[in-house]
Image (cartoon, rainbow over all chains, first blue to last red; front, side, top):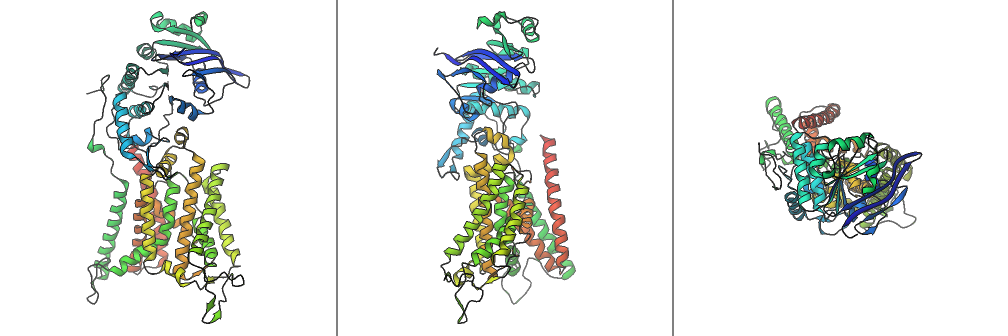
Amino acid sequence: MSDIVLKTENLTKRYGGVHALEGANFELRKGEHVAIMGDNGAGKSTFVRQITAVEQRTSGKIWFDGKEVNFTGPIAAREAGIETVFQNLALADDLDVPSNLFLGREKVLFNLGPFSILDRRAMRKATEAALVRTAVKIPNLSNTIRHMSGGQRQCVAIARTATFASKLIIMDEPTAALGVQETAQVENIIRTLKDNGEPLILISHNMRQVFDLCDRIVVFRRGRIVANLRKQDTDGQDIVSYITGAKTGEAELAA
Amino acid sequence: MAQTSHGVGGLSYDAKKRAWPAEFNVFLALVILVVIFELIGRIFLGDSFLFNTRSDVAGIFNEARLQIIILQVSIVGIIAIGVTQVIITGGIDLSSGSIVGATAMIAMSFAQVATVNGNPNPKAMFLAQGWTDLPVIVPVLVAIGCGLLAGLVNGALIAYTRIPPFIATLGMMVTARGIAKWWSKGQPISFPTDSFAAIGKGLMPVIIFLSLAVLFQLIMTYTRYGKHCYAIGSNEDAARMSGIKIANHKILVYVIAGILASLAAVVLSSKNLTAQAGMGVMYELDAIAMAVIGGVSLSGGRGSIIGTVIGALIFGVIISGFTFLRLDAYYQEMVKGAIIVGAVVLDQWRQRMRALRA
């Protein structure tokens, strides 16, 4: 039990009559990188939104870090240690890198309520440390995010998750909008996270990337988990069959 | 091509990529404007705009002109400090001019003397109650209270009903002007105490304006409040996801803007020794214009108090320059309008250029 970071039991989400997610049982162990795959509308993002409490689940249970949890919202989930890199990045364009990393969690010198004096030096140092840890290269920390390329922005968003003692990182298609070199850069960061033993859930459509980066692949189809396979037990062809429904979910029991 | 290799992290500083602060451009515009007036003056009038040409007065510069340039924009400048914060947060405040009117009326009625030339003050609002000759702190606190209340209403409306700031502050603009007229049924309120009159005397407005500007520039740069202003104006969703309490922050921003408008009212009514219901008409637009000229982006997230101060000086130079060239006040207004639009066009153009380079 102790090495299980995240566990869901019968996680279900319905929007009115639409069953977006049906009885999802999922486990993630320490240091494990798991990919979530599936067609559009298969329930991948819905699944993540229940874990991060962006939406409230219809039924089911979630254990995180050894305790059963009921997060009231995404901020509570984040405070508990679940960091999400959103598809839409959630960065403030006009702020520099340290400000973005520490947005909403600024280090302060004196606490004067809203007028607390920021500890800019400490935030800059912590930013540099986080960038080293995640192997992110940024030309100039004092530049605003606006001046950066898509890949650099994505790197900042990922470095942000590493700034804090996160226990689980979730990335929702982190390379969907990136070029070849930028994708390679983000993938390198993910490998660094793996080396550091940080557990990760990666939502991706990129088969090569998933086989490159993850230990296990979970396939969603029509709101259900239809496959849960270690990468050495499967191949791209196999996964595609599950995604398209050519094969159905007898492997589910393997969880 | 040195691509990031796995496991190798760190930073590489690229000094060339450091962004050129927007304030430099604004300052450059100010300098160019002064040079233009100087040249026109020398060529067509045989007089200097900036320098002292009179032998009976000491000094290199025309100090009287320099004082006027900044003095005439100081009061609206105080408002512009608050408006700048509102715009950086992604909002707009149309109510500041009316808040000046209402606050001037209300505060002045607590700053009146009991007797004028041995007779009871005919204009005293609260003569019967004996609320005359009060210490100066009373009208100032009353003013701050008025500004705070108006800002609170603005902020709460915007934060909780989610109506556009334009509409909420437009409502306050009309309402506060109504209050200003209703307070004394349209009568001016005059005869302030000496201590109240001292607030706006001489160069005091300039000192108050610049000290407030320095204070808020520091707040915007070094405090959590400032950081969150830029964050919300830049990407409100990102700010919300980061756990910033958007509603509270917006209320605080409009409260600060309201208080600054009310301080401008104190300085203005003190300087004029009277308060009238029509005070501060159009000040909100002048304040917005100063901010926009000073490089504050109307789409939020960018700008600074320093920029707005330079924007205010540009305003002052234009007004003084036109007077210097003996041009009618009508032309001033027309040119002012053109400059405001020009500044926004320039800002948009700069953004597009930046987007192309990225």
